[in-house]
Image (cartoon, rainbow, N blue to C red):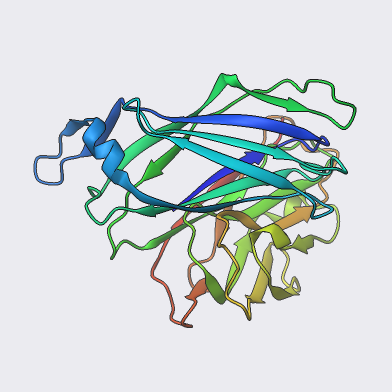
Length: 284
């Protein structure tokens, strides 16, 4: 299981500390009754059977880090400290760090735990040593069944008319991929030029080709020879499209991944069963 710390605004960081807390106010779905049952601290502790390591990303590849775990107080806590001599952490927005855990074989399927950032034990400083304000958002861990389909979604960031629209394939589960194909379908009306496709190397190593010959359809075919793609879950494929300036603010348009043209291959080259969710592009 991967716990990813991500940002949505690039700003160089020289060092920082982030405290995480697993919320004890948990619930899981009772699969027989359909009711929501409280889950106690014992289940929280049993969710993770081991810490496997962490990675902190920096554009210059010089990030150092230390992780401290504390489970003695009843609620699992994690403290991540990091620094970069060149202050190149978060120079590019996206995944800042990832912590890997082994899920206990006794974990209850569909258990859901909220991870929150503790503002009292967290701080960030920029390249000059000045404090950087933090606006924290919680994340959620859900225990899946072994036979659950692999969930992906078409994601679209809210966009101002005339500025680039950023579409992405979003995968919330860490599972190494050897290759696949993603077919983005959208209304070509809002596009004001050709798209730019990218796979961020922080999500793994991959090569890709793009077919954009059909308006409103972009097909990205990719391969990861070392099976590292999506070992960090998130938006590993992004499609950036310039938009028209005359789009009325408030306009919304769906963005979907065509299930007939979209597939993912696991590290053994086997096709994964997919659960695909649509996205919505909003102009504001």
